[in-house]
Length: 195
Length: 287
Image (tube, rainbow over all chains, first blue to last red; front, side, top):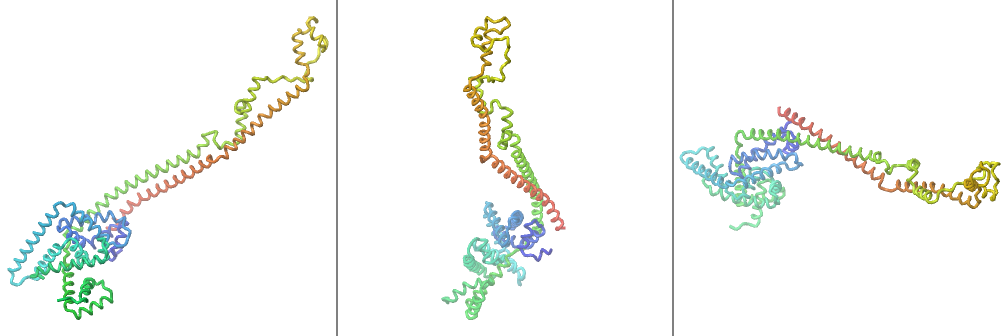
């Protein structure tokens, strides 16, 4: 059986019966998305790694109860709940975030200064700097706006899936997403040197 | 610059157009407008750039994360496998115990009448045999009879044919002679004895004999009447509800419980077998 060609729902149904190979294929297909989702919530690579491991452990324990339909939403809901739990339990998460932002900000400024020393800036280096700036802007958004941008523009979930995940109507998803993009655009325009 | 009312509507549709979720009709309307409106076209281009930039937000996963995830999952499988086996064993033991208890209940209920002896299953014929074996005190008529015996001893009935042969030496049935028997010959019976025996042997008047006969008949009838009364009461007992029916109901319920427990026991056994087989299959697949 070729597990690579199976859909996420089919892999879920196989893993539900105890098929470890099917479960591993689920991990292969979704680990990047879930790691970056955790990173967007927790803003720390170490915490995002721990969260990703916990997400798949909890998924393995819960998957026998899976009743079919919406495997992607099921997976993202599990991931979101774990990340929010970790945020609540981490008493010093705010301090760590501020530290990480400062460190990101410091790195960003250092990168800009370094780029000025080059007569012809390296394109790849510039791309990396732009990416760092983008991350900073997205992380600066309010939590709900950032969450919508990540789920729609980064992870590619549909309006219906986002509505089901966040338990809000589809119309609310569209209006909030429009405002989140507007705010992100304003932040990106502030980085006018790069964008 | 004031926005056109249609530009306001277009901006609302821009996000969905960028996401590819507009209907065909709405897409045509949107595309027709942005062809003519530079502002709305610019707005759409910015929106597409943001989406493209945001899509590059994803970072690569750290090295070794995938193997760490799968090692943790495999450890979880090993631990939960042993837990599931012990849980299945516990379930099997409980099911077996329940089946055994229900079986004992069924046996007890089924054998209860045999231990009880004078239970409701006793037939009328058995009761008659019991009465025959112990006729003294079981029946109400018997007590009546014993009371009569105490108060009125049954008179002895002598019939003319049963009188003792006359002795020729003895004087004839002459009252005068019976009275003066004391001066008779020395071999003669003493006067008192003679009067007694003669009185005993004297025929009873007919009315007295009839009375005695009727009394005897009535006393003979009484036991049979008692028999019918007792048989009626027995019939009433056997026809009373709750006797056999409760026993049957108990038997059925206990039997069903025993069957259900046995089925649960078989299912638990099969679940124990499934767990190691499943693990073997998985390890085979991983290889």
